[in-house]
Length: 232
Figure 1 (cartoon, rainbow, N blue to C red):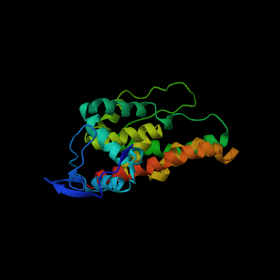
Figure 2 (figure 1 turned 60 degrees about the horizontal axis):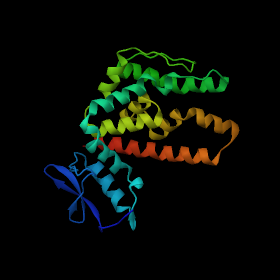
Figure 3 (figure 1 turned 135 degrees about the vertical axis):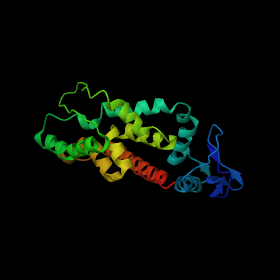
Figure 4 (figure 1 turned 30 degrees about the vertical axis):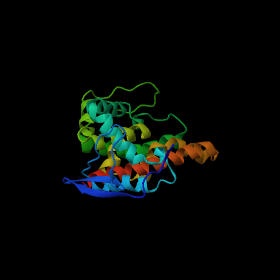
């Protein structure tokens, strides 16, 4: 653990972009890359995370700083690889795999997920197949490069999308969240529909609820992060 070595973190303009200063020192990534950000909102989010630190610095409490650092230190070295990883979630998306029973769960999945698939098919010009089997379901080959294309570009956004898809198990829900088609709360409820259904039937389990609460907070953070990128 590193002791807090600064009094204040603040955002400052620099060459048409925004930097974060820890007192008079300019913040950099762990790999010493410069944090010259297009988005003032993202810079403010990072500064807020540094200002929220107490006597020691807890990097686990700085999700936006981690996302941006990952983008600049790792994803930027090979963005196509991360775009392909995102596309892989789209090719085996959570929304394609449906329950066989009980009937209430089958109906709930259909009512909740089918409109998302209809939206994505229309919005991104793709077609999807759904199944009640646990075996992998082949999707249209052209979907994979399309998913990669939709995610690739700005490495900060790409990193957020890839992390969100891994969290939700769904590239489609991630794109819907990024597009503003669904809220963070809706993304959480749609992605964890089965878990919430089980809790409804069998009651809460403390450990499971702690896990879900943590995930819910991560989704909310990612939503704010993705919106911040659009304000650049």
